[in-house]
Length: 218
Ligand code: G3P
Figure 1: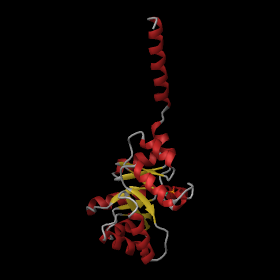
Figure 2: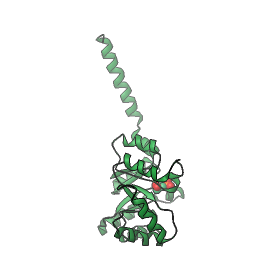
Figure 3: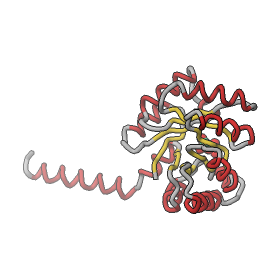
Figure 4: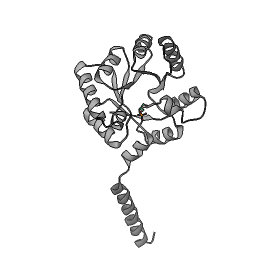
């Protein structure tokens, strides 16, 4: 499973990119609203930091505007992937953009049938949301598993991009079930990495090394 970062915060992207674990990034209007500056310049900077697909979301209600804005966003950088909602208009715009060779990530996907439609429209990625199910006391990972199972059986080329990730367990379970990608908030990356026994073990090794050097008068 590939790891993407789910943020528009350049400092967070640079930090996690420095770990050497990133294959892409995703943004959305909410995440972009948390960052100051010109939208296109932010996308350009993310594309320079991350050597992989960078999702930039279209905010439009009609197909023609979705296509026009998606085409404009795709021209910003070769890494840009156009993000569209899994709606009737989003499907029409996705199939048109895909025919033009522009990659689309269909987002706000909540069912296997929505994901199947996204794949059939030619989306390069589909983003099933996990956490928003959990937020309303439903089983987000269960819905993701249905999509992963259906895509494996149908041999779709569209990649399943697990989104709305809230915890390290979401990441682990998405990997265990075979999702192609998980897009992960910066906070969860840090939670994935941290373990108190690792920290304690590093401290002990450093102390024992220092004690040995002290005994040798180093
Ligand atoms: O960016 C798409 C998705 O990961 C956002 O999820 O539920 O945290 O807004 P959420």
